[in-house]
Image 1 (spheres, rainbow, N blue to C red):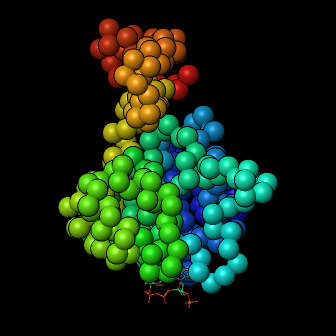
Image 2: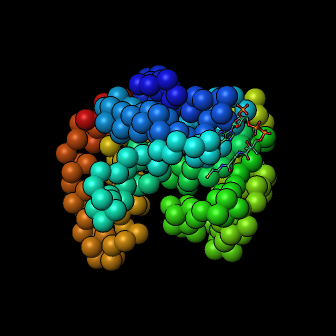
Amino acid sequence: MGDLVRYELDGHLATITYDRPDALNAINAEMRRDLNEAFGRFRDEEEAWVAIVTGSGRAFCAGADLRGGGGSAGEFPGTFWEKPTANSFESGWEIFKPVIAAVNGLCLGYGLTLVTWCDFVIASDRAEFGFPEVRLGVPTIVGAIRLPQRINWQYAMEILLTGERFSAARAHEVGLVGWVVEHDRLMDEARALAQRLLAAAPLAARTVKEMAVRSRTLSDTEAIRFGETMRKVTGATEDAREGGLAFRERREPRWTGR
Ligand code: COA
């Protein structure tokens, strides 16, 4: 792992921290590589079942690095015509493990795009959000795709087309943030939510998230057929047997993730 993103695994909980506080965690080419490495590790590491993403210092992430240099969106091999569409978590990597954003401060541009891919958003009462791109003369693309899928159209358009910053309270009001908490309680609250998620069998939970994601673009019949196939796959795991056994023995299940 590089120097600009920290990845810590505590039991089954991974914490990914933007760690470039001097630049308000703005994303340059090096941080993009570190971020992709962290999310790739979370996706692939068997022991990691749930992740929290947060920022060090007073910001969550001030978006793309504007001091020049580029590279915040990562590398694209090939020419323009062969550009792949997904080369990071923010741009659409499939990760079916739950991800919690613990937004500790300013959350702009690319930082907010990442938040729109997280399943849960807990914000400090000091957090502030915004897509300033239109005020810089550039469009936000993935943000424009994702935000209207998460919140009411006119609030999404207000955020995307004005580029204004808005408070955690407003973010909660429009449904972008699930919980606003006292700044000093942020990580405790995020970890408490993570513990609730860790009570679930990890492979069953992954199947549920994958169903929720894929069924958005499938017909009902295809979604049900796919889901019934996934039910058989999940039912063949050690955890499915453990679930029934623990119920019969009246004890807490011991999930293995296998
Ligand atoms: N890219 C590169 N560096 C950034 C940055 C960015 N997006 N955002 C903040 N920084 C750096 C500043 O240059 C400054 O560095 P310095 O101390 O070496 O000069 C440091 O982070 C602190 O920022 P500063 O502007 O002094 O803090 P502030 O509290 O006065 O203002 C912001 C905070 C976020 C309002 C302001 O930094 C800003 O507008 N940043 C640009 C945000 C943006 O438009 N991002 C979207 C890109 S698509």
